[in-house]
Amino acid sequence: MNIIVLIIALTLTALFSLSGGVLLVIGKGRVARKVQKWGPAIAFLVLCYAVFGDIVPEVLEELPMWEVAVLAIAGFFACALIGLLMGKYHHHSDLHLHGKHAETHGDEIKNKTQAYTMLAVDSVHAVADGIVLGTSFLAGIATGVPTCLATIAHEIPQEVGDFAIMQKAKFETKKILILQTLSALIIVPAGVVAYLVGEQLLGGLPVVLAVVAGFLLYVAVGELSCTIQILHKKN
Image (cartoon, rainbow, N blue to C red; front, side):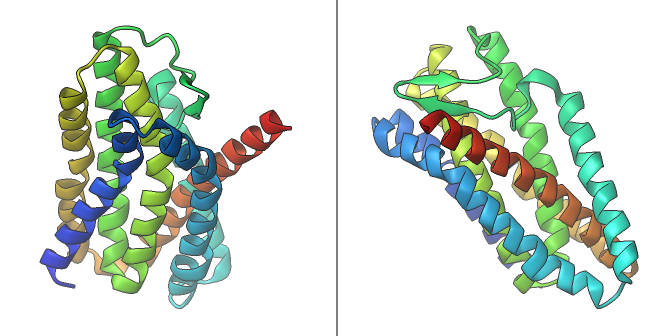
C-alpha cells in the first residue's frame, strides 16, 4: 500500500466531509439542510456495508467468529465511553438543522470561546477517524476505501451542524472555512502515523480491525437514531 495513496485518500476524506458545511456558509442552506436531513440514513447504510460487507469478512478469514464478536462489542462500548467522556460538545451529539435554525445539545454554545471548545473536540474526533482509516488501509485498498466512504457519509451532515454553530457564534465565513478545514485535515497525520505504526504490528491487524468494526457499528447506531428522530418529527 503506497503511502502517497493513503495521504490522498485521507485528504479527500477530510475535504469531502466539509462539503455540507461549505454549502451552508456560501448561501446554499436549503441544499445543506437536505444533505443533513438524508445524510444519517445514507451514512447508516454505508457504515453497515463497510462493517458487514468488507471488514468483518476480512477478519473472519483470520479469527473465529466468537472472537470477532467479542472484539467488536469491546470496540462498540469503548467508542461509546469515549463519546461520553467528550461530553456535551461531542461531535456526535445529533446536530440537526430544522428550517433556518440549528438545534443541538450544544444550543448553549453562544460565544466564540465555547465554539473553539467544540472545534477542539472535533479535532480530537478527527484524530480518532484518522487512526481508524489508517488501520483500515493496512488491510488493503478494498477495506480502506469503503471505510473512507463511510466516514465521509457520516461526517457531511455533522459538519453542517458544526458550521451552523460557528455562524451563530458570529465567526466570519472565511475564518469558519479555515478553522474547520484545519481541524478536518488533522485526520491526515493521524492516519499516516496509525498506518506506519500498524505496519510494525501486522500480526495483530485482524484484532485491530475487529475493534474498528465495533467503532463503526457504534457510529451506525447513532446515525440510525438520527434517522428515526427525523422521521418521527416529520410525522
